[in-house]
Length: 95
Image (cartoon, rainbow, N blue to C red; front, side, top):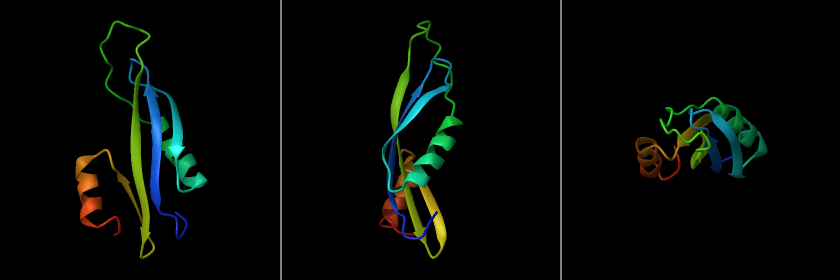
């Protein structure tokens, strides 16, 4: 992560009924390189199959990542994860 790049990346991700990623769309990003890295990461995600008989079912959601660089050490938080979000809030958004 380049020095000085910090902020929130918001992505929308869609999964098919088998839990495979159909697409991810970056809605907000502090940096285009981070957006590309997030797209590669999200493409590897997989959910548990839905079990639904409806083959057209698509699950969609938003993912929030917070990126920061402190003392030369990059930190990435998945804000959707409560433990990671609590750690970020406790640090005041800085580590």
